[in-house]
Image 1 (cartoon, rainbow, N blue to C red):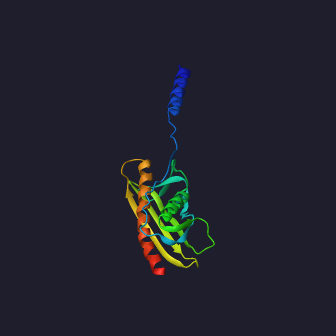
Image 2 (cartoon, rainbow, N blue to C red; image 1 turned 120 degrees about the horizontal axis):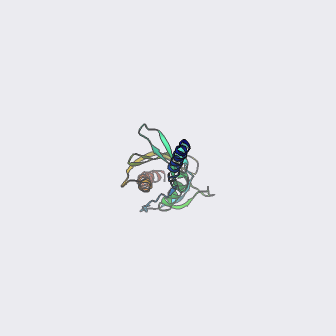
Image 3 (spheres, one colour; image 1 turned 45 degrees about the horizontal axis):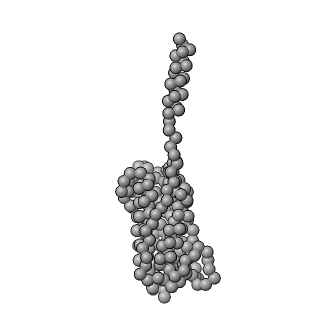
Length: 189
């Protein structure tokens, strides 16, 4: 009787362990709606690969817990590193604003845009993006330095909504950057 009871208990325990569903890893893109500029800047802009603070540059999505600690999510990932995704978005944005855009330093006169990711995370029901931009001229003189932060509410639950909100936050920041940068370029001409 004891052996039968032990076998039944072991069977029940093993069955319970076997019912745990493994969660599928999900990968997300960032979509961006670039607004074209009314006036194109007649110069070349070099878009450097953004840098990021620690875990913000990795492929796992990051969330801020209630105690303000950051955690990497184990089943929700960006399609690429946010540094790569953001460089692609910045390149598309710059193509709508500058005569020529490259990621390599050209031989002719050019400006260089450096970007640093300071926040790129889910905070409860919002996406938080904070980016720092530094624009340099061909002589490596700093023309512009600014930090933009955007909290974008999630329209629904889930990480698909988070990825969409990240894209919207980036769009808002790039619209602000466009306004600021056009004034900087005008004042240096």
